[in-house]
Length: 300
Ligand code: AMP
Image: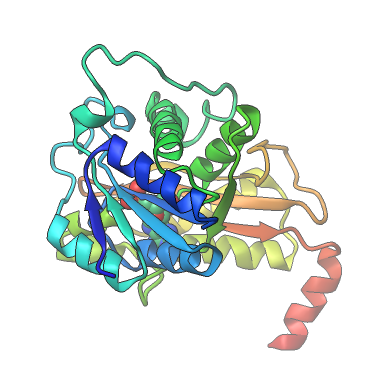
């Protein structure tokens, strides 16, 4: 069956009802389009888990700040339809802005705490917009599974939290980051990079990997870990760092020293030219750093 393009909420809800009445499991893959292999990996994950895959394509105005790139965000519906179909999507839900937000739209989901730091601190209303549009997309596509990328790590925590707290009846699945050969995480915004910035963009992954190496060798002091990432990033003189930080991966807590066995997340957000890039990496603090240090030397 060719992919079906759906542009209205009513039609999408009717299809979701039919699928559910037939006992079919539904996976949704929310995207803002201009698809790449990061997105298609999520569709493939949906295909593994469910009988029907709904990819959504909506550049959501409520998650962009006033001086951000909503207007110039890259768009190419024909190409996206083809890629979604080739990668196992059955439906592409692509509503217009007024279909999602009628005049005088007034309802928003607002989380406390977890949205105050990192991305939320720099982009103040961003996560309210993300949580609201995800809740709407869940009510429209009625999924059993919603597939998100680890690429937007804080977003996955926000979505999991409101889904749990508001009793949405679906599973959130998080898929690994898909990267270019130099380590740059795939992103629709990478198309903004000029040649020089593209060449420098591998520095984000290099900084994450350098911090990981030091953690494996035994480093557990949070500010030292952050300093390692800053130092690597600063090897690109033109870079503007929003943050390069480490935190507890479950609750984004920032202790002075991470504990044995603690799962942490390393997160970077920075500008190369006018392009804002984000990346992250999850690592578990080794149980016994001295043993790892010995192992590391043995391995050389
Ligand atoms: P976006 O279209 O950028 O809003 O992303 C839609 C979904 O794709 C989000 O869940 C992202 O985390 C995910 N995604 C974006 N880039 C990647 C990537 N390089 N690897 C894995 N998932 C990604």
